[in-house]
View 1 (cartoon, rainbow, N blue to C red):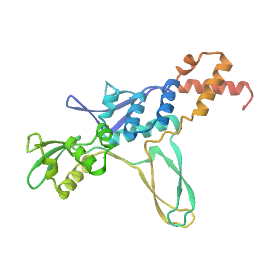
View 2: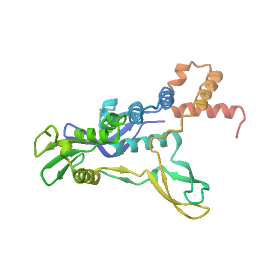
View 3: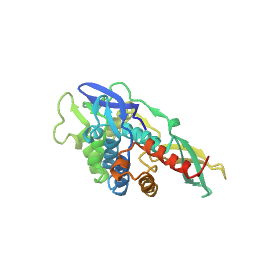
View 4: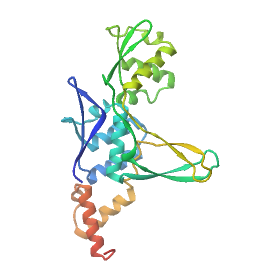
Length: 275
């Protein structure tokens, strides 16, 4: 599988420039093994996403996509990249099993990742000016690093820390101590509305109807799920290649995923499994 690039809906800010081209590296066995081990140790979703994307990406706008760079991407960019990675591993089409909230019948939904709507960042991204009654704020869009910091906190503490991290200036100066505590619910709602307006977004909710009772349903899509690296199949593929060609595990793991699958296809053909 050759490397391929995508255009981020938001982008990475570096030296006063927004970089939107993200390049994935070819997926080899070593990378797939890392994905599997990460799946088993998925204690923190934001940290998991940072690790997975840092392993899968080569560059963002010519900048090496190390864990720090990946952690500075906005939430929508990280969701978008995980969906793109899932397409690389699993294909564009996938199925979601849902249960009707009305008649309780189970039903499947066919989804194409390429059809999921994506909203691009607005003017000024990743910063926004928020005008409150008593102050003018400069705020930035939350990024992966913010998610990592607030994940273990209770809701109120998480919101407080997120506001501390994302409010960069108050009337042109750094926020003074106690400013966050002075914000009203209306102020916070205004900040959220302005940031949402310029933030990119990826669809994570699907509107459909139950095939049994026709009741309207909202089905949630998890953009962080990777199901294309089943452990049993992966090790079976390594074993099959080792038995057929007597290659070392290291050599097999270094093969790009597409070439490994090509050799497996040739083995199946030589065994007469299909014409």
